[in-house]
Length: 109
Image (cartoon, rainbow, N blue to C red; front, side, top):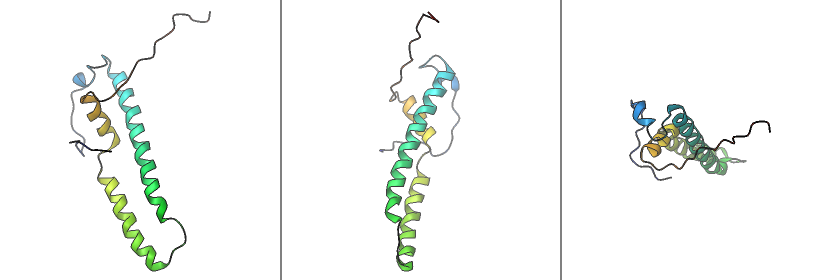
């Protein structure tokens, strides 16, 4: 995943401007939370795939060396921007596609 200039710390945002594209702050929050969950799931799968190599029976000396590799991989993911910040950045840059489901007019017919 290519990272742009995404802040690694939480920053203050004016919710009035954040809600402008949808016209509703709650819809914006739902969109952002769903995208953040997608990003988090993708990162989790990627990390699990990388750490899969470290499972199994090994010598104690090999374990020490591989433990350092495991730690480096974990530290890399810890330094990445949080999924919610990535989702907000994508939303502000108009990089997210979302749609509102249409409601049927018929109720109980």
